[in-house]
Image 1: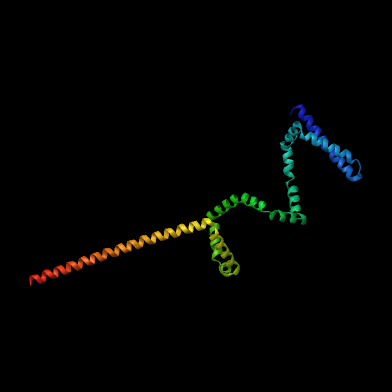
Image 2: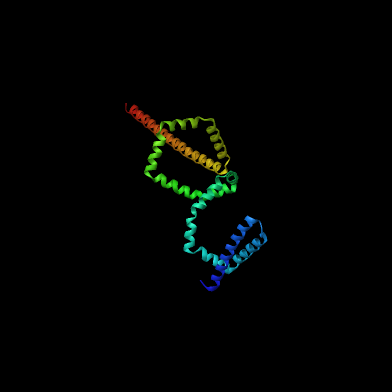
Length: 221
């Protein structure tokens, strides 16, 4: 660390200490608010300089400082948890969760991870056995039957089918499938008709041969 950066670092620490002291003094006595604001602006100006940024970056990359920050993880976690579980925090979080953009971003960020977890679980023998046991459970089977018979499930299925038929891609796939089935059916009918024609020709040949042999027999007599 060169002398210039060391000077800025010491100056920064002194300013931060002074700000804390002035803030505490202002909170207790209600005096000198202007001096506190001036000191705060000076600290901000110092942090905006290149030397100030370099000094701050050097402080944050120090191992002792990082260990100190890591030791405060429990405090950070408790603070976040308290904020989210508070009434205002719950209301704010609910509002954020209802925003389509936020939902889409969360879904995208978790999609790959969820897919990877599901793929690993599907290959896990213990998970497969557990799923088989769950599906074979009589109570679970009864719940499935109830679900399939429920009005809500039928309405959801009807809605899904209607949406699928309204989808242009699905319509195109259905049209291609019907054309393929028609072509296969036409080919089979042609094969059947050709087969029947061949059988008719064979039978006619047999009839002609039998009649010819009869005529020859009559002529000989």
